[in-house]
Length: 140
Length: 140
Image (cartoon, rainbow over all chains, first blue to last red; front, side, top):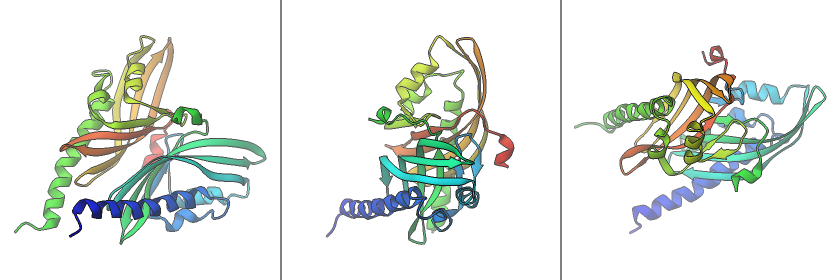
């Protein structure tokens, strides 16, 4: 008979892969700016560096703004990823190079992201983004 | 017989109270600057507004720095609090008035905080703090 511990480990492994796919889907903004829309829970919010919240719809609206040109948006490093059967958590840093109204930004931003299962599928349920000033060496 | 749903609700309610006590204990820094030390998990980290991580020990070191005078540190509002049997999550805003080397700060900072149970007791397992520029009206 398979022990409870074995089952939990099995769950953890495939769940971690699903969560990692969500992080990469979000990170890869240059390919799919609307990724968040179908991959967040009904009550998702993101906390902006300012401390103010923003909905997935409004974030995607920003990504689609004609004044914003995304040059690079990619996952640099996942610092932590934890999951059990129905919740998950990750912390990671993205490299985000973009210009807004012609002004260039070259950000390393660190995120905390929370995941919950809805009808068996992992969704992003919460997110907080730091300012773009992460010094990657501080994460070692 | 008590249904599973009733049991889950009962757990949620007392767990939420424990989590709220952790938030208030952390917020009330003018009373106990070392609160984090005994109330975080062994792998706790906080993400600073910059995107850089800091340990509980180093945060408490900052709070105890003679150059830092905490005038007000209080919970303004809990925007969200969710918990099940062994994990929890909250988002809240603190009012933090302090002077550092004589320079005054008057911050409204928004936090995401994650909680996990260790041997039956709730601990803070992760935290991210925004910059001090939260506009509270954006949370309504």
